[in-house]
Image 1 (cartoon, rainbow, N blue to C red):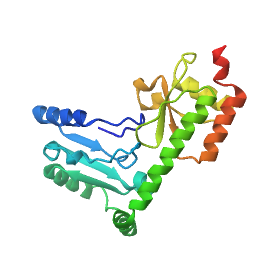
Image 2: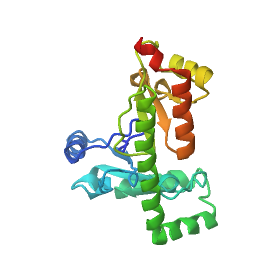
Image 3: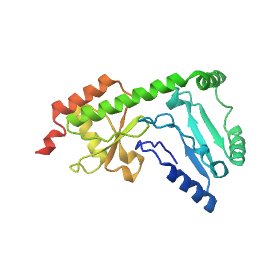
Image 4: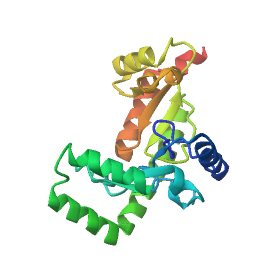
Length: 223
């Protein structure tokens, strides 16, 4: 499971997680909960751990990463917590695969956990500002987007005029120079969607919106 979700930006309500835990318990299924975007949640919502729900430790483990919250992409530093038996099995597996993470990177992770709260808050604020800017600017250029509840992505529906998200992404790139990720890259249910990233600057977002407007890429579909 992955909420806040990549690529859609959706956030799961409490009742969904509680139902998931009951289902896993009743059917003896292990839940591997990828919570890498837990700190990137908007509109005043509070980040929440999967393991904070009753019964979660009995049925699952939770993964998190320093890449998203602390900007340590490329360091490949992560966290696995939860069910004791699963952790023990994974430790045994990992010990036969590699020698662990470069020690200075681990020290950097410790420092991030101890002192990085202001960085996390600033990162969240930056993405929240950019998502509103993108939705506003792109809407004026004819592309109506929905505000994501979390993550650094916007999940955008493509017009009916295109066969699928690959065809749309190709035409968008050729006509405007804007590069997006086709939703089909994430599976069949992404056929009518593309993923937009909020990792670029506000200037770049405005520039992309101006290209959409100048080329009338969407506005021409109205006629």
